[in-house]
Amino acid sequence: MIAFLFPGQGSQHAGMGKELAENFSVARQTFEEANDAIGFDLASLCYYGPEDDLRLTANTQPAILAASVAALRVLEAETGLVPAFAAGHSLGEYSALVCSGGLKFADAVRTVRQRGIFMQEAVPVGTGSMAAILGLDLESLGVVCRDAARGQVVSPANYNSDGQVVIAGHTEAVSRAIDLAKEKGAKRAMPLPVSAPFHCSLMVPAGERLADVLADIIIDEMHLPVITNVEATPNQDVSRVRDLLVRQVSAPVRWQESIACMVNLDVERYIEIGPGKVLSGLVKRMAKESTVQNVQNVADIKALVK
Image 1 (cartoon, rainbow, N blue to C red):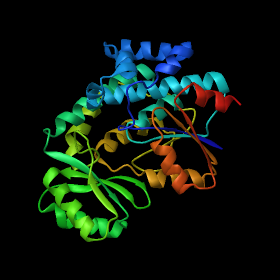
Image 2: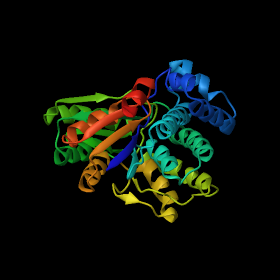
Image 3: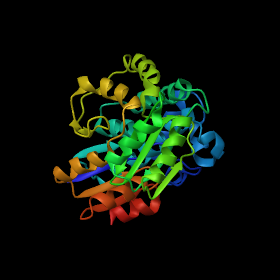
């Protein structure tokens, strides 16, 4: 069985989607649809940057979504491959929902644009941060977060793979956690260049605002299950989608468990669709017997066609 995977924030880069748009009309049309949905030239931002503007959360999220769905539509048109499951890392869950048919693309673009704004505005710039902790077991990391909190917030935000966890919270608490993690024997503990502390309780206000946006969005019947970040299990129940997306903003991304779930469901081939190869690297570490491929340019499409 095949699973389609979709990247999240951090995978963006100037030039993403440009080659596909130059070679496939369906990719061009996808970017044009995104431009119309949010009322500015998102395509040019994806193609040419500048990187500083592309890194702004309110721009990053619709940009990655558009580049991912453009690649998805080219893949579908050129290969006819049909996945058994879809999954996405944080923002990528919206791309997965578009893939499933649950979300209309234009609605998804507008929603993640708002999601980015809400997440950025939930915490004043500089107040929150994130850090990657490598080579520390989860029990020790839990102790680190508890000891570092001191009345503030710091907690796991992304369970990416065995020994690779991202934490988020108040900047001072995250800094204390970095020092404590090193003392506990972490191989690496380093701050990440992000603009807000995603996937922790500081994001609850953003989730509440997002709920109001999602209330006006129609969720259509899903023709394949999406492995959700919040539960790391397949969901095809339309009535649950909004709640899962709201909870996702402040809950940790359970990516390691999501891959384990797909392995247990007999997925043997994973195709990462969109900019970057971050998810492919994680899958290779966790599902060593599987086939892992990428789709972000013309060469990738040709390789899949062969």
